Length: 178
Image (tube, rainbow, N blue to C red; front, side, top):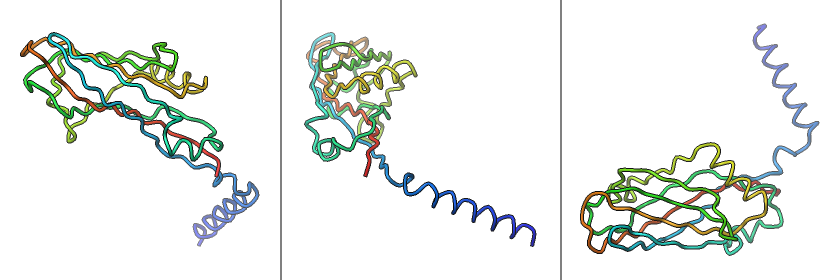
């Protein structure tokens, strides 16, 4: 009986707290907004390419632009759509630049086989906290346009007309007022 009374008091206190604070807890809406770079990389010893993307061109962003409280980095990964030859492996370097071509982050990993990272096994870009902070600082500073550059230096396999098409997805979390 004592547990029921304590539980009832706790529930009543929580209900009063929600009522007293109004609906502030329900005024914000969080959702993920992906940006995607589809990069067609070609070369002999290096396969490289780049693409630009502006959040301001995104329809979802435009729908909520006047209600956005904050935008923060959530995650990033790449998916290899096509690779020729499939046996190549090497060093991956991805750079994210702001709208003024300033480097926000550089990510490098060795011994990558692009053919291993198709849509069933995306390659997760494991950014450290400093890199995440740099992306968030760029966003907080008003940057809404980015360029993604992709370079794959072949260390094993064919050195004849390497071709990789990769989709690089970066997810941002947007906090908006309803």
